[in-house]
Length: 151
Image (tube, rainbow, N blue to C red; front, top):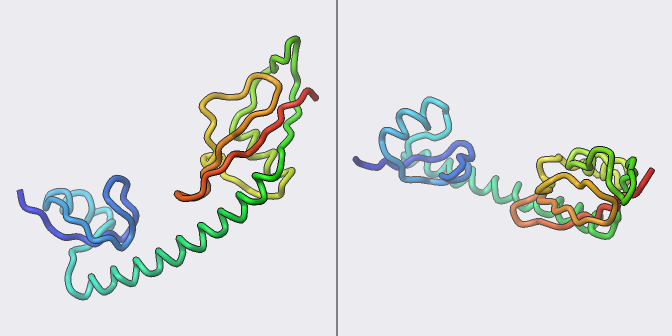
């Protein structure tokens, strides 16, 4: 089994990011990467193109990280209040999910956050104050303080 050098045209989970030069088996390259247009063979001209892709990626990554840090500074200082119907002993009728948190953040802080970027192991089912981790960028993770109050 021999390996070939390929340049990734898109991010591939478990393999690398766009513009990376990777060594993969011939079968993986021929049967998976090339038909899906995820990679191209590493020729001399393609290697120069890959360098350009990496430069563009690093600039975009830095811009994305700065934007994520700005949002983090704004949300760490804020407390998001979510009014819910609650019964005896502070138990909720239903639960508070990441979708509810994302909607409340958009409404109260004016920041649109994709619910997939919020990490909540299980829905919140009681009144109180909770920390909901948000991961907006691979290097920017911060807690959002969520206050669940009776409506």
